Image (cartoon, rainbow, N blue to C red):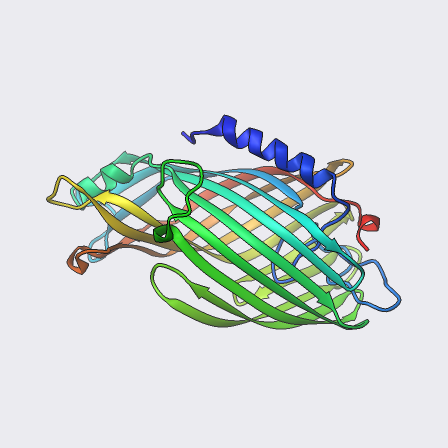
Length: 347
């Protein structure tokens, strides 16, 4: 089970009080949970299209991922060598606090805490010691972000996001040990053709445990009618949107997801803990339902299927113990609450 919930709850309540005292929020437009900034301005454009999905100023979210088979790469995913995951439990809390809220410039500071634990039902012969030490272990992520959004005129705007993350199995809620650190940044330019159409291009830089990457991406958002629209961050996400009303909507589509951690695990054939890097990636086929329930408070519920793309364990001392695992698809369900301010609070 997820630990330290009382401490997490106190932290989230404190952040909520700070956030509600701020006047507005704004984000780089390259994230799915950007705030909707569609209100017209005489001089400066505002990222977002009509009826776009709402931004999350404060988010509390719980996820359950279903059972899964885990086996050595050369073999099948069933049999004596395979292990069975009963479920994966996740908790996430995030907040974005506005620092500057001007018509042409918006700056936010963001913090996110996530914790997940893998619960095994059966551990097979393959890497038995390693999976036993992973079973039930809290895998934590702390993210610290800075968002800058600048409108240059009535049509063109730019976005910048800088982020430092600490991902691993550290015992305390936070850790700044360089071993767990990853760094990323992205910059993008957007063009708002009209209220119902915007597009953009950007470049993302990332440096993690495994490598350094530099990837281009594109953004395309369009509202076709009062009911239908599309929201994309290419090539990682394509979501169709159906608006029952402006405050009651369904999104469905496909998204690429990945996570990585620095861990201490039992190396097969030894008694001591060995540093490992663990990363996994999936393609999520999903549907998301968002509904305003009162004032700033929104409900979000998400369900779908995770199709595995990669599961890899890298021994940082001896590469002979590196291995890739084969995994089976998993269903998942996620539910949460978030706060989203009224549009007229955003300059």
